[in-house]
Image 1 (cartoon, helix red, strand yellow):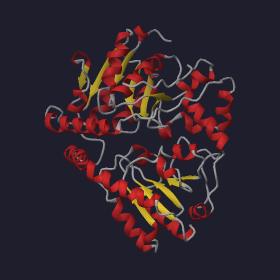
Image 2 (cartoon, rainbow, N blue to C red; image 1 turned 90 degrees about the vertical axis):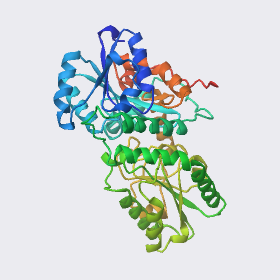
Image 3 (tube, helix red, strand yellow; image 1 turned 180 degrees about the vertical axis):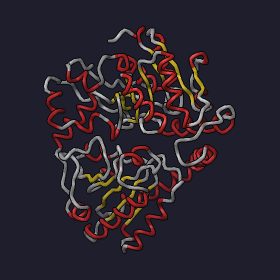
Image 4 (cartoon, rainbow, N blue to C red; image 1 turned 90 degrees about the horizontal axis):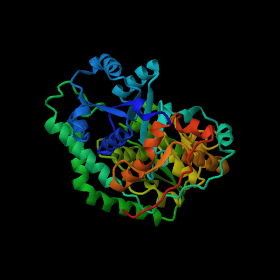
Length: 428
């Protein structure tokens, strides 16, 4: 482990809530120095140390020069961020690479919801996993004989996720006057984002009732069905690592393929992302396209909820590049993906034309996927979560040493120094 007293960490934007602030405090206890650049009031609310907080009040155009000066003035050795594609982070990754600065990237778990992802340099379509073959994975695992961690029976985070998102956007909406140059990295304004979060909280009981009823209809329908796993249209994985301009383009392609190739008694179930907030009317678009292709009676839409119960009886699944594809593969179900995904290996994911896939989907190599999943759990997947208190405690017990380690998770495994990972389930 590198001497922490020689390290200076710069935190940029993190997941909503206190995780980055708590991680910064823990790193400071090791002797490392920590700074945080905040781009709005929401960033500042969750960073507890005022002395190390640097408010960024410039415009997006000023950011490269300001960041370069900050890296030099503070002697930054490491940058910590959540997701690597939003404009301020993409620029930070670029400048860091030119200066030999380590970039630590957190993301939602590739094996969510019970793990989070920690990599260096990039995640998702920029992850080192994109260029790692199954043969290389198996070679790295040759000397390792560890048990597969078991997911806990319950790890509640969704309500906390929505709650912290609402708090974050409320802070920006009400207290952002001094950040005159702030521009959100998404298309909607902060006011619009806040209204959507508030509506989700208020309408949650109604949405749950509709979801339960729709799921019951599918489960009791007695028909074979295929799943289409929808993603947030504003999510970075969809925006930066997929071939589609809009979610509607994906909907159209899936329904056309289903109508052309699926047996006449098969059905298609669209499963919305758990955080879908209604900014795009997916249900209406699906109904219209299903009518146009003569399959309206065989197409269903379920808003959010648990994926596992639907996968238990599904024939196959299609997605752009959702991490939910990992759950499909874990069950040995055929999967067709259309965007860049860390699991997009030829051993796992079908390359059949979509109509043929719906007609006769090819199954993944189950043993190859088990090896791949074990590789993830030995490297970039860390037990815990960003949003619930128990999830953060579980995560913080492990992650600080990962940031201070001399190699990234994949290099650590190759060198035979990876920790023996266990998921200790505690009732907290």
